[in-house]
Image (tube, rainbow, N blue to C red; front, top):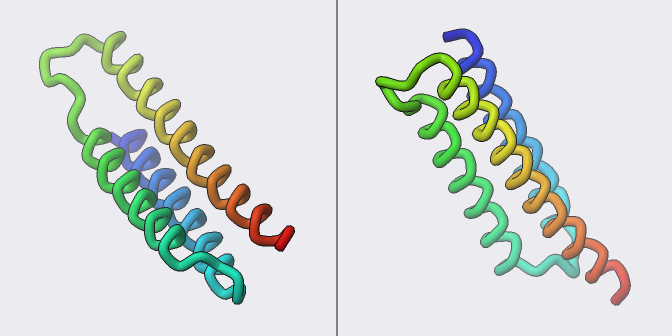
Length: 98
């Protein structure tokens, strides 16, 4: 049970950090408000989806498949967070050149 709680806290932490980075970027005068809104919406969707998936492994799964489920979930969380962060950095880089 504690591991699920830790995973949920990790998801919350990553989401919070991504939103913080996005909001810091939005303070720049050249920031694109529409894209910022889209990124924040993706972060919120990511948070909701992965927290929901944290609590719903198959009820009849054996221990091995449950471990695989959570390993895949952790991988998915990290991949999505990296994608969102990469998008934000790309947006930041594009606007820095102008």
